[in-house]
Image (cartoon, rainbow, N blue to C red; front, side, top):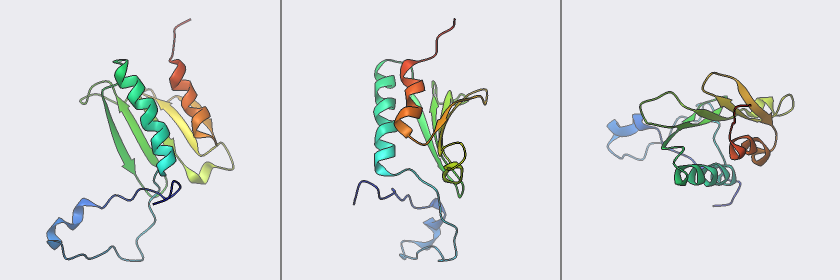
Length: 126
């Protein structure tokens, strides 16, 4: 597998097939997901924040139009931050964005490393 090849997760709906090896229909819509390098950058940040005691859990969500990495302080709460990838917005506002729990977009751009920088520094009250 190469560094730019997306990670493919199998859907849970195929449990009733009893391992028949059936693949999804070719007419199924493409799913937007993070590449290995993107996921590596996100998980490196996540690991540092877990070690600092700020974050404790995460969730991945892949859809047709966007991929989302949600960060939680506790598993039962609303996500603190969502790191989103919208490939359709790449030419307009940028493919990547960091969204706070309130829905406020903290940073948006075409470079994931630069967008994740807003979470590196942390937010401080002035």
